[in-house]
Length: 73
Image 1 (spheres, rainbow, N blue to C red):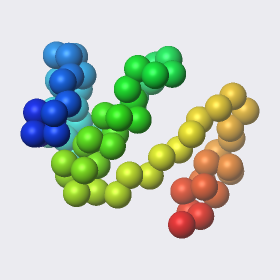
Image 2: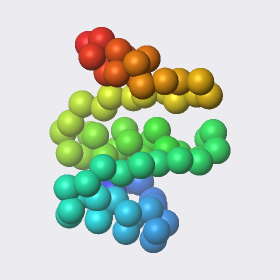
Image 3: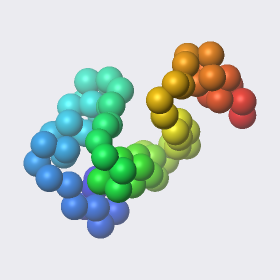
Image 4: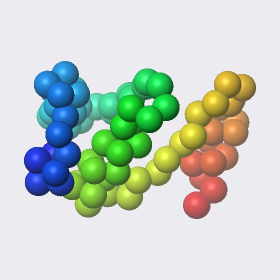
């Protein structure tokens, strides 16, 4: 799936994506800015023909703000 999108993932990321899809569980991505979290989300959304909903997290973000943003559309 990732190969068809010309995305090269290391073994640990590919394993995490596979398990998430196989088990039907969410995939939590964390890391420093610029490591590719958004890019893998875009690739997966495109490959799975799903809409990408992006939540920009920041210090001080609380559940009421996050839920509001999710329901905004």
